[in-house]
Image (cartoon, rainbow over the protein chains, first blue to last red):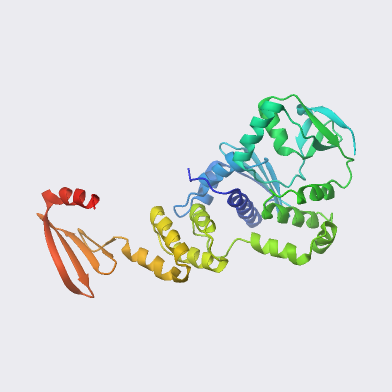
Length: 91
Length: 266
């Protein structure tokens, strides 16, 4: 697991994840997408990075809720442990 | 103000208009300890969701902590279920522990959901200047070209008291190197002491990292370039200055560990 970092970085990690998933969904022209641990690993750990572990840390320690909404997307964390995420693009 | 009433935790849920995305784990721990000791003293602000539930607009963390501790009922204050997004903005805007990102996300969302006509409209409603909001939004934007950096390195840089431009310069330089974490920490420390020489400091540390030089040889550079070449019976340790060999020693392989130990005692 990566070391502790601030909640500022945590919120940015969540927002970046939402943006990336929303972009993926837009590419595939899907209004909604269910993303599991494997897909997250492929997406976030590309190039020897530790994005997936960072995400787990953020979800377990920092997330204040299971639902996050921005103007472009809303993200629901179905399972904090695995994690499983549902991303919905907003019209 | 409405009357305080006690509501079962099972009938409460967090409102989707609660803008908080992240919480401080340390504060959550303190909150839980306080609730376990004294219960919830400050009422939650709730509204009737219309399906038998009350949605919590202010007090999401208190609700989560209480639910985890098995508290059955919580003190609540009900507000009318009209203009909830606007109420949420008013209530949460004054809370200092919302991060700038959370404020910006909520404001932009309310504009998209047509609660307000424009960002200017929000600023007027809150009584803040447009420039204040746009400065906040600028601060929230992730610095460009630092995508390849681990979050932990970014955080190391963020924690320094450097100017924003220096931070970006350092992040950009570190992105192109693959320095180990302890070296990155040293670099950041040195840059903090000497903010004018970011490139020189990073360059110095990159050169000082051992690089392979053909088979069985590594080199690293500081004032001189040092080369260690492993032979069949001895290791050759050479120092060079601009191509000229200054000195060279041969250490028998069976004594290498002695030299290493000696070195560790310096």
